[in-house]
Length: 155
Image (cartoon, rainbow, N blue to C red):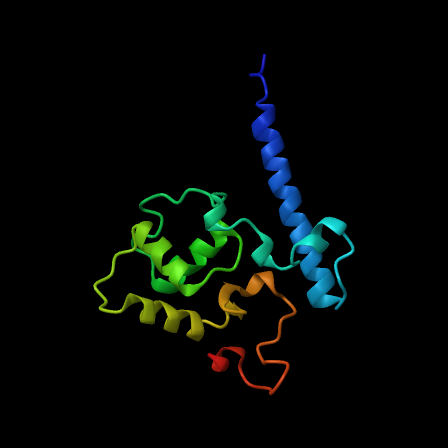
């Protein structure tokens, strides 16, 4: 016979999946279709990836102490964003990859990381003051909608 199912864990996983789907639907409605979200729950919070669980809420998956060992700076940042499944600020990414075993002798690792995020425009996209993965925003233009300048030149 099979082991009994852990219903609490199963429900928790389903709720997390539902939340991610609601956010994805809200992003498509808002960013692609240009309208307000139709789901009343998603209308209470912004329908952007920032509505996903944050590090402060304690819902970020645990990151092993060697998760970023021997990775390049862009690969470590990409892996971190893939783990948390939401945009993050450069300071947050810096702290997380250091805690996850990224080794550096750089005097200003934050500057190295930020430069990598800016230069890797095929991988990363600026979302407000945070960074996300390009694959999360397939229709997002590399040019700003306002002046035709690169979005990250506004910093």
